[in-house]
Image (tube, rainbow, N blue to C red):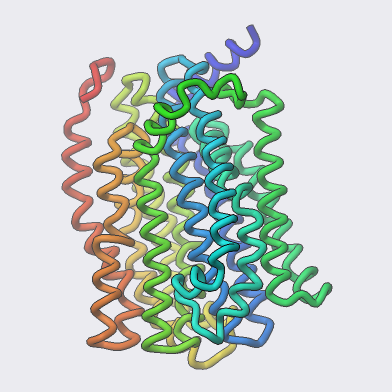
Length: 457
């Protein structure tokens, strides 16, 4: 009876709470989680920069590409299952929601273990493929060993985190992510300098934080704080459910997968046209840019369960209101931070690496990236809307524009004409082109939503 009362209360909260209040309530924990996650990614970059080696700083960007591969699987299973779960809960079917949760969790663990195995077998070819130069390779290898060890836990953590968010339990998701992130920031200087492990210490600290974060998130499910239950008994029809999860979550895989390819190509082009200094500079700028972008992404992730729940409950007017409110809120927050980034770009880059060449390349790149941040809320909110309501075709197409269809040809061609400037401007150009493409697609979908209570289109 208590579980049913809790489910009814959650349903009422998700379908009746005023949209601005609900999205802010769900968005604040997810924003904090995103910021903490990006802060500890930046902490790795900062502390590795203190080793006094530009090659070591470049290694963090190379291994970030490896982490993106692991995240791609975690996000695919997590957001695919999360979208299905939120719609099932909107239809008051928690039993089916538990089956999707269990299948996605098992798939993430298996995929993470497979990535770990292949990573150890093909370590050097993989890191070279991701853009490592010969001088960066030894640092990247020392860092990547620990990231690979944590791969199953990292992938599964993304699943657990996304399921909690899509259930509207963003606070519990925040606890798991922020605890791991804070511990990683504490662990970096202890292992790197206190234990004289160098860049290996940064990798060990990240791996331990991922395992601790996974344990905390798993406890939320084991202790009965969720509506969707993890159980071996819930692994019914695993292949058909897995295919549905992959179909729904494929936009996340495409987005993260292309991001990995984009990072690899960016590193290769940076190394070709600017050497280790350019690789280090673009690695630093990417981390800073992602930190700012995390604000809008966090608000958008607060919108996702609202969209899924209310679409499942056929309350389409709330889906529309949530979409427009999220874009506006994300625009104000990201825009403010982008202006600050434009003003203080040189000083911010210098914090991470006191190298004149790195600072020069990074400062201009950061200014271009900050200008492009102003168009990101429209692109992010539209993609999250499509994925949350199960429009996987549109979600996949809009997901692969930024880092795939537009960025890859630009980064492959432009540097050959304008050198390192092409490396610095490729992503911002792709961002503006994505913005112009997404606007009409989103407008048509919003216009097509039926009246409340009707069958979905």
